[in-house]
Each structure stands twice: as C-alpha cells, then as structure tokens.
Length: 158
Ligand code: HEC
Image 1 (cartoon, rainbow, N blue to C red):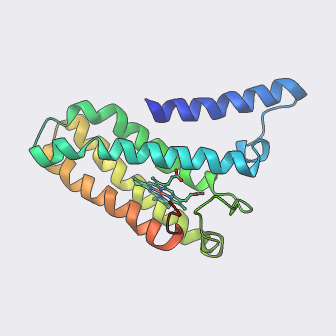
Image 2 (image 1 turned 90 degrees about the vertical axis):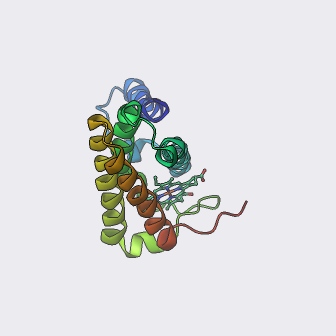
C-alpha cells in the first residue's frame, strides 16, 4: 500500500508537469530533478525494508502468509522499477549510491532482476499460502538486498 502511494505520487508529478507545459508526459527521470530521483528511490528502498521486515514474525513463527499477497506484489513492482531510478548523474551528496553502479550497469540491473525474481517467488508463495516456499523466498529476497548493497551502496553515514 505505501509503495503504491510512492509510485502514484511520481505519476502525479509527471501529470502535473505535463499539464503545465501542455507537452506529452516524458519519462519521469527527465522531469524529476536528480535530487527528486534520489529522494524517490531512498523512500522506496526504506518502504521495501519495512515490507520485508513485516514478514519476519510470520516466517519465524510459521504463521499465515496469505495476508502478504498484496504487499509482496508491490515488492515485485518496486524491484522492477529500481533500474529506472538510478539514472546516470544521480550520485549526489546525501546519496549512498556508489559510482560503481554506472561502471557496472548491466550487473547492477541483474542484481535488481535477482531481487525481482525473489519477490515474485514471495508473491507466488503468499498467494498459494505456501509457508515453506514463502520462508525460502524471504531468505532469498534478503540475500538479494544484501547482494546489491555489498557492491553498490556506500555505508550509511548515520
Ligand atoms: C539493485 C540494487 C539494490 C537492491 C536489489 C536493493 N537495494 Fe537498497 N539500496 C541500493 C542503493 C544503491 C541504495 C542507496 C540509494 C541512495 O542513497 O541514493 C540503497 C538504499 C537502501 C536503503 C536506505 C534508504 C535511505 O533512506 O537512504 C534501505 C533501507 C535499503 N536500500 C533497503 C533495501 C532492502 C530491504 C532491499 C531488499 C528488499 C534492497 N534495499 C534492495 C541498492 C539496492
């Protein structure tokens, strides 16, 4: 739900900018400033951490996973959106994105795809109510976060 709101807000920005100029909407990265792109991806990353964290109790306790069908579907959408939120020129002060992202673009995108694959398995398992498959996909998704961060995210300053 919260991730859907983030994506919806970006769409509104695009629509608002288009109505001001009378021009057709362009890709968001062209309309948003580099600072706005960084803010959007940091928000999405933080929300994805909240979503994944919300599964831990049920995974540890062997609880129901069907209630996670909606939020895990949003994780898939978020994972698919990650590459477009890292356009060149957005390694700003205040961003933890390492410049190596743009020197290894294909690998960075592959890391996002690995996360999308794990999120898809989470969503499939949630819809099926398959606790074991959900737990396995939960571990894979956590590994996919770490697999990207280890290479492409600088240590948080805080
Ligand atoms: C494909 C690479 C990639 C994947 C996959 C990925 N991240 Fe990130 N993440 C990044 C990068 C790069 C940053 C730094 C972004 C910035 O500061 O501009 C980041 C930043 C963050 C932040 C800090 C946000 C903030 O407020 O500054 C959190 C929290 C986070 N990620 C959590 C996650 C979680 C949880 C997952 C998995 C569910 C995940 N990330 C998957 C690359 C990734």
